[in-house]
Image (cartoon, rainbow, N blue to C red; front, side):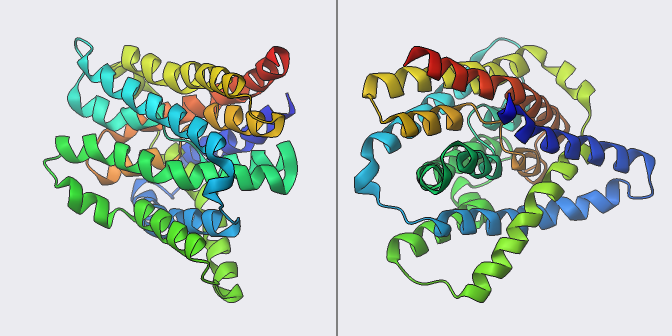
Length: 300
């Protein structure tokens, strides 16, 4: 269960944000500014650095990439289908659907290093580079549609997509990034996780999950049961090397992205509902992720 301990600090940061916002002078107005800082600056820096740090050779890892993309595409399709459930609010679904298929990139890279060192980090970086743009587009589309916003405009100015595309373009072009810039962006990115998770806690209202408990169960069921099970089947059928199998299954069992709350809030969605989903997803992943890795070891 050592992998579960990796997620415990994330959950404690969420709890810290919840306590600080409600029981200290650092109340809601402070965290509004923190959310904007994380969303528009720190998270894009984190994505850029994570992608440019590891060389990407798409042709060398086609099967690995295919399994990761299949997991994400399935999550998007199933999450979207829940909009047709009777009694599901369109706005609530648009806000929360992203939690079923998005993933915490920072935890992904940290976990990959523990699982297999630099090689596993490179594999995980490839999955992140390929899947983050797809996940962000899929997350923005229902929110933009419900808010009456232009999808194209929202995508072009979405800072997470900008950071991802810039990282991909830099990596694939082979352009060198000056060391001083890498260090600066790395430090900015390092601040994204704690501040982002604390912002989630500051906006947390667990009671918001009671507004649509069946939808919450469906979305988190996709994130923590359906996608890991699908990943297990795919890597075994594809007969990937053991190290790549482990990375894909870990990727599928990650907690959802903490920036999901920030995105929902910034685009006029139900931020408190998404904050509850993010918090519960982090807690579920502490059990689900090591369980998925154990299942892989048992089946192969």
